[in-house]
Image (cartoon, rainbow, N blue to C red):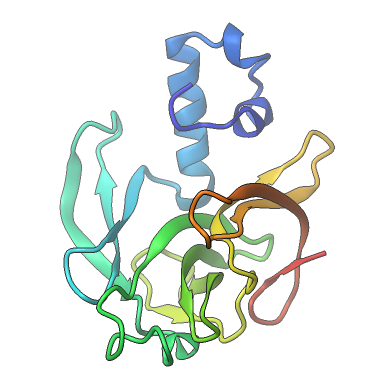
Length: 196
């Protein structure tokens, strides 16, 4: 099934994961990729330096090669909540991790991602493009979505169409992670999403 969950596949008309042909999976993958960004894009975290970077590059329609040059969207140390115990000055492993893109009903382009927070735990942050496109300036919500030692999540609509967020918890100690699923609603003010 590649990188796509049964929730994503169901949302795009797949009967079951065992009944999906390779061609059908590619068609579903294209719909998922285009749903938020309107073009195939690869978004990844770069840990090559002391301050993790969130990077992106547009891909060809067949997803086989990059189109243009990669761009750094932002760095892990930029948000205000990152300025503390786990800041770049005190920890050489200030990370960007687990990006997930989401377009709100009023058109905001959000990125949910994980890093260490000043409260000595792993969190899920929300950043947003100031012009609703990937190439905009990325701003960081001061309030995080998850501040309870969990991260690496994704949003999905359940079989009733309700928005949910799944992430692993706890992040520490290693090996104790379990999946958590929480209902989510969009809100007008930052961070634009709220667990309910």
